[in-house]
Picture 1 (tube, rainbow, N blue to C red):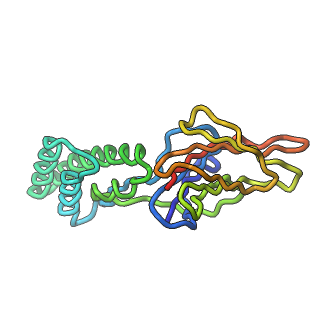
Picture 2 (cartoon, rainbow, N blue to C red):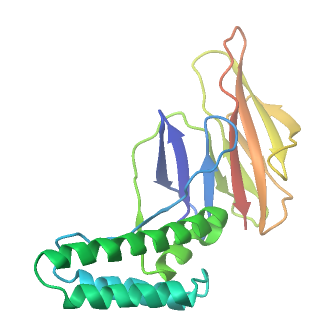
Picture 3 (tube, rainbow, N blue to C red):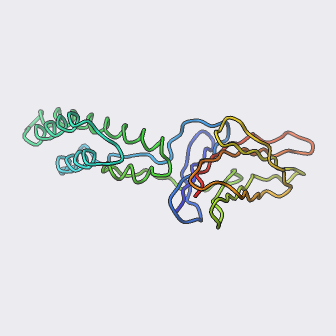
Length: 225
């Protein structure tokens, strides 16, 4: 299932798509910015009686992941911290867990950074470190979206609409910086063809009104299959 990351009213949401296959695409209400496609979650509560074994499983996964390389010294130090936590009693157990938790969160940030840089493989990267994914599926209306077409190298763009007389303006870019104008449409849908597979493309959309005001310039990018 393809996931959409939608920015709406100050928050980012992940919305399920209708196409199949791996991959993610972004929907923003302004220019390109760094956003998280999927968020890594530790998933170990402070009061979990099994937090020792669970922490060990995460560290082991991080240490053996081939998608994110963690220095052996970091893994060794965390294994020692987990051992100390398992042996601690009384008030010291809480202190030792704080050390373990801080180390686990540092690992998680490293994996999150790798996920942000490789959105196509973000889920696999997260899982390779033994982390879980945080997802939200709210209802969205009138949001600029995109889906990969049925054929390879195609993208289906869908612009937000208005009850007033309007026109849809579109742009395309291969680097997210320089955009080329695409022929506009009266219809909200625009099928883009002839794209290179396994390449990222940026698209912009603006709803042009007959008597204004025009809509926001919206930017998104798609990893094409």
